[in-house]
Image (cartoon, rainbow, N blue to C red; front, side, top):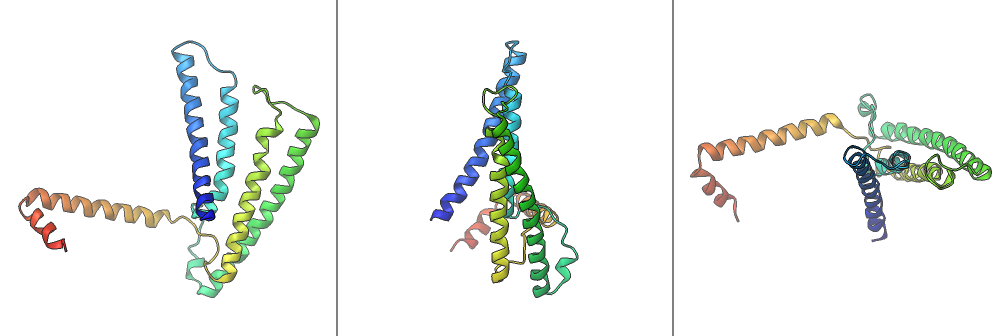
Length: 200
């Protein structure tokens, strides 16, 4: 139950960020070209929201398997070797994420210590930049989760998006729908009978 709530919160937060970006940008365009004015802080706020969306989306992409990768060679390996290669890849990603995480903490702490303010927004700059360590920490947690599942044998490393397969399935689905619609158009009396035969 808690996992399901967390998943919905993640999706809702990403949708909220995207909605805010769209609303602010639309309002800025209307204000500039209709009323001849605008908000000086709109561009900076939209930039920060986009950065939050990207950094938060990294961990979400790991969870749902939306990241793109090249696994043509790895797919030819036996299951055990695929798991080993997948685990090594995940551990490399963890190491890279830890390096970035340490650098992000140092950078945000320096912004906090110096007290630099944002360019247009009346807030300290470290507040919007706090998403750097937060986003990387979330990504690291997801990667550790993938590594654990790989060790348990529940998956073979990172789940990657297969755009070729999805495109083929989409085209095949469209072709089936078009074939059914063409059949129903050419044989309008046969379509209801076919539906009745399929009904239990």
